[in-house]
Image 1 (cartoon, one colour):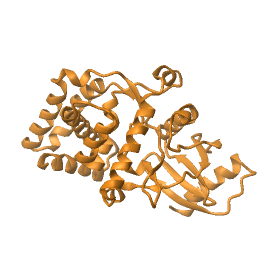
Image 2 (cartoon, helix red, strand yellow):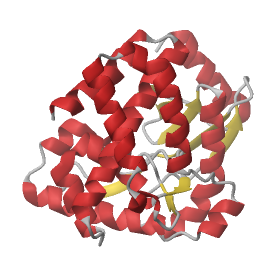
Image 3 (cartoon, rainbow, N blue to C red):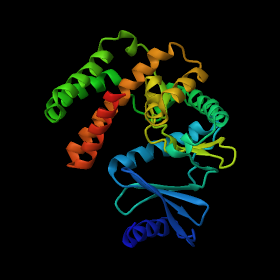
Image 4 (cartoon, rainbow, N blue to C red):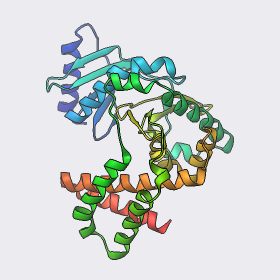
Length: 298
């Protein structure tokens, strides 16, 4: 990170919280939506980079105090809530225990530790899902209707992505949409609260035992199809892990559920391509198209 950007963030902390002394600052992570700084080795300050990121953070500011009593794993407890000079919110909270798992760390886990993590993660998913939907709605959590979203996505894909695809890939993408739209069971679900971004880089684990210690980044919280919770788990952790997780979560008809979730993954890749098109980012376009190609070979 450039010194000027770091100075912008630290100045916002000083301006909002003059009694907070900054002795040490380092970059903890950065994504499309926000930047996270580790301050004084014991605090995390998160700064949205755009309006959408600020809206997501506002959702967390409202929901996490309500959700915290329901969750066994540690989640962010915002001690500091401020506004940046650009009008976006930012927050500070005590550093959670554990380290980010990430995909590489997950793959390196021995079987017994993977199974233990699966059991803990299944419990976390159940806890989030058990949160009262009416309370979440009152708190402003948005509802996400996959069928409606994917219907609109299909139209846009035909207009903007199909011209980039060869005939074989077009046929594959069409078959994926057809598989989703023609199966009536895929639209039969009881809406529930979901985290909606449970990729491994949002799990914190104990570095020695690999036990789950925390969950972060609740900005995508939504009320939706419970199966949508497994999208990034399948994409990042694979079929075997997801199958076991579904079983530990008490799900039935696991093969059918995996097929449905795999369709969510395809649609997510297509949405990523569209993001690239809309932002003129050729790298994102190519990355999304490459993922579709990998799916076809699998």
